[in-house]
Image (tube, rainbow, N blue to C red; front, side, top):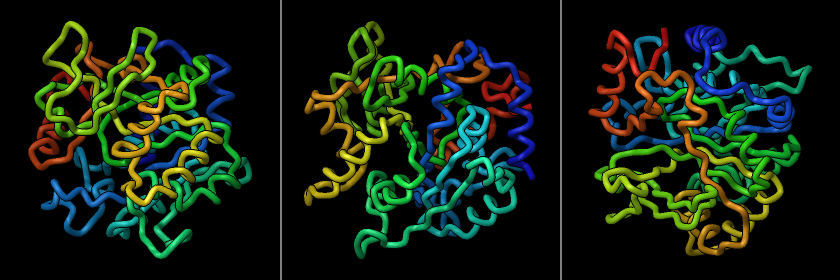
Length: 311
């Protein structure tokens, strides 16, 4: 029941950001979240040899995916699909035991979507393909907005702020980004945006990245959290599926192509505007993709005033 405890606790915590408007509440009710939780986490292989990365234990009693699921529920998003693939038994058991309390009578659900080769004979080939292979299910759920996010990062975020910003701008796609050291650019997608927040360039794991204006040691890194206009998402998934040269990944293929095309309104969302309970003025987000990063994030919890406060 650790996941449930975290949800209840998070509801009591005061957020250090403005209360979302009624407009945002209506928007989240018309949102479906697609959580991508099928990753192997090869750089974390000592811990993922027998389970998917989102199912790895964190902080003594949580699983990594609990952060994403807690963020969703506390943001008012109660229609959640979870795409699973690699060694999913531990993850499925955790979701069934800890996240089975939503009421389907009110069209609330946490639904697991294992790879089923629904559209062809292949398993999920990339992040975009995982959504594409379940697009018929997504259409039946009839969202106006689709939030796509990973289940393998450690952070606390109010997605309502990002969704409201997305709708106010009339965006087709909004990409959440966080400042990170430029020395780590080879691990992330790197964003360049204009003064209005519109993305003008997107580099996937570059050797020489775009840096934050006035801060050559910092980059805007993609968090792997995307808000799509639903109809636009379906259109782009179909287009990507027809491209034989594509690896069918949002970060490697879909988003760079859309930004380069320049036809649609694609914006960046600054995570510092939606991060919950920042302690030192810095938005806390950790990839925990390596054993060292995973260890350091766990040790962050031991500080007297932890950057990530779960207490």
